[in-house]
Image 1: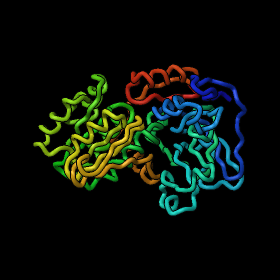
Image 2: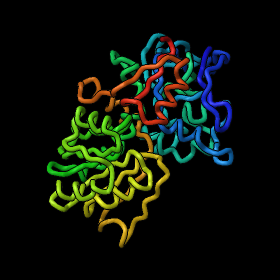
Image 3: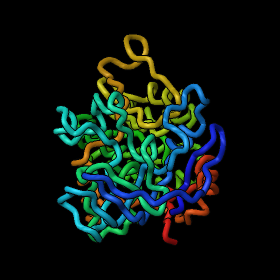
Image 4: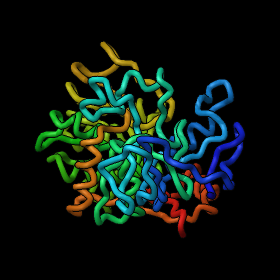
Amino acid sequence: MRAVQYRTIGGEPEVVEIPTPEPAPGQVRLRVTAAGLCHSDSFIMGLPAEQYVYGLPLTLGHEGAGVVDALGDGVTGVAVGDSVVVYGPWGCGLCHACARGAENYCPHAAGLGIAPPGLGAPGALAEYMIVDDVRHLVPLGDLDPVASVSLTDAGLTPYHAIVSSLGALTAGSTAVVIGAGGLGHVAIQILRAITGATVVALDISDEKLELASQVGAHHVLRSDPSAVEAIRSLTGGVGAEAVFDIVGAPPTLELARQVVAVNGVVQIVGIGGGVLPTGFFSTPFGASVRAPYWGTRTELMEVLDLARSGAIHVEVERYTLDETPAAYRRLHDGTVRGRAVIVPGA
């Protein structure tokens, strides 16, 4: 089969021929119908050799959708032909976190050598992929896999951050979303769908600010120091009850620190390398800072339900498997509108 692999530290991903995998007992093989690209892929491919821990060659792709193609011995609960998406943060399946469906916070996965697809295990950027357990599949039903696959991360990750901040997002509150790209434009829609907050979107790109307006942001601002005074003005000097930093770089975290309200919350969603000191003389009294990771399986079901209702959608650019390296370059350059999705069968 054909797959997209990261094969050399510092190199570009390559389209290669590799053997088609067979499912072992308990495993499921999918014929991949769609795979999403993510900035975290670019992040790990940019790591120096001494920090890279994901193995080589690595078949990329942690956002996956497919049709069940083959079942390993003992598998029940799905049938060949079922359309599904992959719940990516795989855990041990046995601990308290996993029992709650929160495998994203499994404390044992790393020690047991369990890694998410595309982030250690072979991922979805291939014609076929192996899913280790049926519990990591969520029925897609009649949703379009190409339009929906990015919800497994670009929808689930901001949804998890927003749900954990609902106490701050009452009617009359203000939510700031820093970064209106792949995750950010979905976060705006989720905020509009499940909260009463006024949504302020920030970005350095006029095109992404235009997208933010189109998907429901009440206000859009350039992500620069002038945004601090603008947000303070919009909130009567109070600041934002919740700030979702989808970038996570030092300048955006500093901006988040300056605009969060007393007793507010900053959610550092992006992996831009920034660190936000908290405490007296740094963040406002009562403000909390959180670094959420992905989301729970239940929350993924809820995100898909929002999509079925029409409350949220993902702006998608489609590419073939052969076009994946070029799509990663566009992603790196910040020129993708919404989310890049690879369609292996195209």
